[in-house]
Length: 334
Ligand SMILES: NC(=O)c1ccc[n+]([C@@H]2O[C@H](COP(=O)([O-])OP(=O)(O)OC[C@H]3O[C@@H](n4cnc5c(N)ncnc54)[C@H](O)[C@@H]3O)[C@@H](O)[C@H]2O)c1
Picture 1 (tube, rainbow, N blue to C red):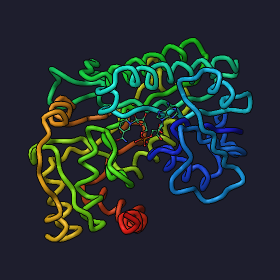
Picture 2: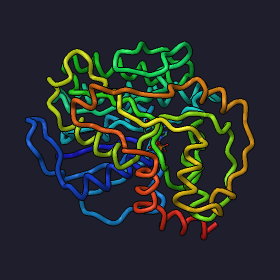
Picture 3: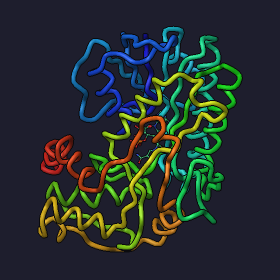
């Protein structure tokens, strides 16, 4: 079976790809564990650094918002599509046209390519806690109304509804995961308004200085990449009937203030690591972050066997084990 990951050379796409290659199989159309013969990573650019060679791995570069390209990538052999290609929150807010083109038109192109197959492939869509905003309850629960206050959040909310509708019509066997901020993200800082949460650990632990653009009291709901990949696999493999009328699953998260993150950094890297942080509040980023949910109670996900990290220390430890050596090499390379 062929599996396609859009945004496949990005942070989560690449992480999932590594896991799928290691596992070698996913649930197929009949629900049985089915070997992955081909794993396509579709993205704007090839992976940096390159991935380890693997006969099953194919990299295709192109634009997700171009329906003809997407139709060529998602062909009859495709049993599963993980749709992760997106521009991040800060970019979608700053550039309305790019946000709607990639995050909305791109999602429609993927859904239409799946529909054109007539085989009802499985589809996993990455949504976001950014579907909530404005006048929210203190704790987000499974049935909290969607009130996005950013273009990115609106695009993700629309994507969720499209996944539901295309599933209802049996064009896809879709599911959407509402992700909290995934921490620690390796590599360079990106344009997500949440980027600081990863930077608070990543740069100081790898010996680099970092500027934090939000106040110490800022709160973020976070989940580790390890827990996320497990959740993606689990949600993918469940039979579609398990989701009933609602194909979206709110993922669990722990809540942490920037200050609590710094405390965890101190435990992992000592005072020298903490001294590498400079606090320079940026009103644009702070406003976006203040508009996001502060806490999540994801009972449905938990009933499906998906759990948050036990605490910030678990998240930091996962980064140290999985990513720190490569991160230090990146910093050393300049
Ligand atoms: N990482 C998080 O904390 C987080 C939180 C909530 C939701 N999400 C969602 O999860 C998904 C994956 O996130 P990520 O952290 O891996 O982001 P990422 O930026 O690392 O990966 C997204 C990928 O999409 C690609 N892309 C952008 N525009 C494209 C285009 N026009 N055509 C083809 N590819 C294009 C990018 O090149 C990038 O590699 C995204 O949909 C994101 O919105 C992520």
